[in-house]
Image (cartoon, rainbow, N blue to C red; front, side, top):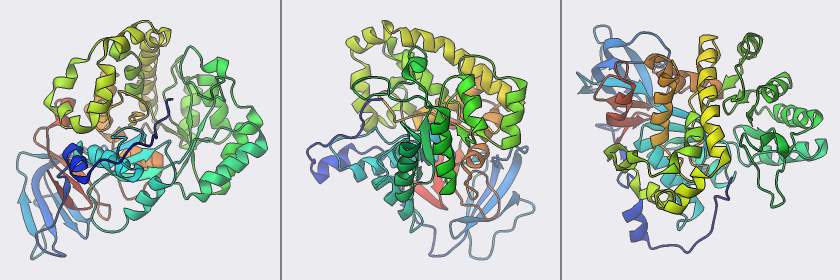
Length: 447
């Protein structure tokens, strides 16, 4: 993966504001301080997988859901501000269980880069991000700050730098280091250093030549993380790698298994051990889709994020970049591995495994933050999931995979993070793009 943090000259404050995506996205205050808000008469898809309620009301108080249910059974409290959402659909805010913070305007200080990206995610209805690879300093600060005050950005959970041990002692020391940074999860990779320049690979053409961590080393990574009460997510490609890591206590598979069908015994193991699975299908699409310039970049929904996307768009639009992709053996093989990954998503969901939406967005050029999460959900439906199953993967299932108890579903006591849509995604999953408004902790983000 390319180096994503670079220092450049600070631009003027006016220039920064002019270029920020969703620059005016800020929390729109509730009608009066401390007042409850009732979102009334909308279709409700609550993220649990239960059938939609065709006419529902959600009462929000103090940023959390005070009551929710059929409008006939929910009475807003005295003094509440009622918003009539007849004809609208409410879904939980989307959770990206595997993203990164490497995109954005590199002319900005790192903190402002991260804030820019979190606002970009939020503008697309992705209200929570689990970063599986970042600086582990500014990201942690922003995670801890989100517990205070109104949010104008997506919630952030962080893993800091990925841990890959060269020995048992090295593995334990690296885990201790990231744990000391107060991260939320540990990210590891099955493969060790692949090239002399220190870069790593996750490609189907090179993965096994990179050299996997020895069993005692990856066991040390997982064991040491668990000592710190941190769960572990792993970058991998092959079924045999997944089996070895799960046997060692892995908590989350952070990419698709793309070499063969998952077998029934392995599916049963994942379900019994409650191991989460994140397909990152759009990660594979991004490996080969730039053989030519994609047409979707002209879509209004993509253009919503162009202030940030423009940095990568310039690179992926160059004919020399297209030539590079067309001549890449990895790109050609990834087309096949994507098909296998999509097949495994269906097998795992049918088997009752917790499958969480994740994209690997922001990791390298052309992985569009916010936009690709909608594409990921669409690919899940193309893989054979129902629209409801795909929506659950982006909401309730993602929260379960990450063990975030107060997000992901629209139930009493949970944070009021939600998206109001103007169309029903159960009839067409692309209706997730029809965003009327985004709410985080009960605050409507004003554009």
